[in-house]
Amino acid sequence: MVTGMVHPMPGHDSRCLSLVPGAPASVFNFAASPGPLPLSVRERLLEAMPGLLQMHHRSVAFVELAERLQAKLRELLEVPADYRVLFLQGGATAQFAMVPLNLCRGQGAADYLHTGYWSGRALAEAQQLGMAAQRAADGRALAFHAIPPSDTWQLRADAAYVYYTANETVDGVEFRHTPQLTTAPLVADMSSCLLSRRMEVHRHGLIFAGAQKNMGLPGLTVVLVREALLQGALPGTPSLYDYRVQDQQRPAYNTPVVPAWYTAELMLDWVVEQGGLQAMESSNCSKAETVYAALDTGGLYANAVAPACRSRVNIVFDLVVPALLPLFLEQAHHAGLQGLAGHRSRGGCRAALYNALPEAGALALADFLADFQRRHG
Image 1 (spheres, one colour):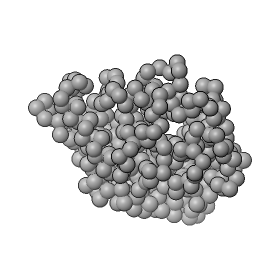
Image 2 (image 1 turned 90 degrees about the vertical axis):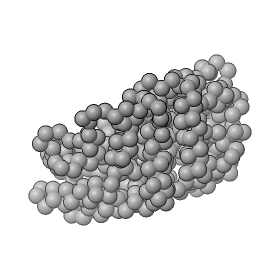
Image 3 (image 1 turned 120 degrees about the horizontal axis):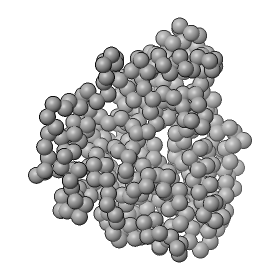
Image 4 (image 1 turned 90 degrees about the horizontal axis):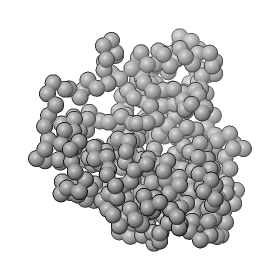
């Protein structure tokens, strides 16, 4: 808790944050980013905000906040003792450059499992930096509707790391299990699925995630990295992009977004209150099954992702009659189902089922899908 500087905001009821005149009684946020915050977290955040906005990042209060945040994340994710936990800025997108700059070092070789939009962006960034980064797996031939079988991956013996995106938010493809590798350290972008299920930190050399999906607000990025990989970035790398410098300057190398750190702590507490990662996984699987069952019934909706690779976090779908899309999105919005438009690169629809979306939200979406189909199918 933030103490000694917290003042409530008179007259402000956080329960009304999502409501506007004429809006439905229940509003559910399905947008891919930022994800929703639980009501209890919003209330505590609003109460603490005046103090957070004035908290000096070298103060005792902030150092204590940083220590609590790291300890809680380590416990919840079962982070091994030989891993460092870094809290950085720049969003997950900055990690597309930081990973190769810090891990490629001499050889410059890296293998990427290209399974969708975001792994493609990461690969392109590494190549732009001049690294010998290659597609070890290429999902383009599958239209990014499935993950290429592991026996087709072309992994190099001299690769500095193997990179994958655990959940592709744009394409709706998810790795249900950790890739089984022994060739090189495994690097994972878990921006959209961190805290959504149990995970195997020890099987990875590095994991990163933007906080704004399941861990709070934009402005904070989590990096879990094995100490043995902190050997310093390539010569010429800006200090801000050097993991070793960031680790040496903890809790923060430069001025952090303090409210994002505090919100992350509140979100970790909330996950524990809900029953931990196993409870989150169970709830998220249930929500996904509810929505997929509605999409697979009747023929008005199409999801081309192979069932074994279907994302339980971001469900992408299309209407088989594209002309109905504007009407679908308009009526969904008026029904309190917000943020269902697909990514600008593919169009269609997308429903993000992050931790804080209640199961009532998935049920409301399923009911709307069935009702819209009855009226227009």
